[in-house]
Length: 468
Image (cartoon, rainbow, N blue to C red):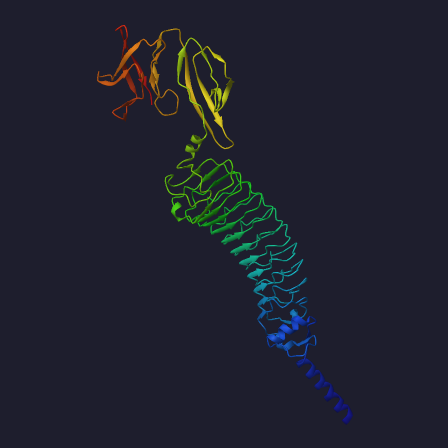
């Protein structure tokens, strides 16, 4: 009876002692040494740590310890913050650490990372690894994700509506949808394979870096908070930042820009500006074309304008005077080509063509981005002079002046009167045209009378119309 009781007592004591002295297997000496340094274990290195010493730990910083194996981390069941970055880990099993809020495992050699069992995770930094797939659809509280310098081909953020910072640069991502991440403030996705980027829902976005992709267009109409934009080395053909009044830094160099609109009313707030290496960009729209832009790059750029329509003025085009005659031979052009209709439409005409009917002929020239044109009127008339019946001085380049064509220089002078007989303009034979103004002011649409005095003192009278 005594021996049986003694045996039971010894067994009970063994079980009790064992339960209070349960160990966690930690085979990596550098991991165990790090725990010793933190006071969570005692020498010597024996591949074991008292589980009771680590089960209540909430914060663990073991970065830069040359750790190869993190076996044992599963018993840190209360862990909320783990920093194991800058080690040599190839695997990381944190499936038991379900209370994790912050995980930093960057600069290791991880090829995969499983975080689907971490519903409380708000910050995940796993950059500079070899991760090919990252599933964050089960981390709805995530506000900061840094996964740059990995091997990701896709990234699904549709369930991460609280995401504030997203850095996924230097991967192989060809498409990313961030429209559900409405809190997104900083977004860095450069050096990927992205062709399209829709940011219309990201109204809180203030920093965007999307350089070194294949993006062809960007619309920032809804991104009123945008301050920093780095989009160089893409395939952008136009960029309109006229709605982005908070813009301070822009790099859109090395694109295919034809149009760059920076007229946002706050050009004076711009700290850094680079639109170099856009070979077809012949003008930039700004608040004030006369401001000092020498600190912008390229500093040698001079073609600043106040409206997009003014950009066409930088395309050279030949200008020919209106002519009258029995026929007209088209001369050689330096800039542009002849057409019978505006904007390079109608029938092309060539140098040396003989014009035998009255018509307006257009000279059209274009670059990759813009076009410009001039026009002139050919009046075929066997008479000695020609008096137009109307003109339209609206600065469109067509019939902007009323001009008498004097083929044989028979006209001595012309006087123009309004319908009340008041002299409006006197034209000597050296200037036989009128632009529709009186003392510098535009005259209204109306009928006007002319009196033409010939060199023979013969007087011709009649009227014509001014149409605006």
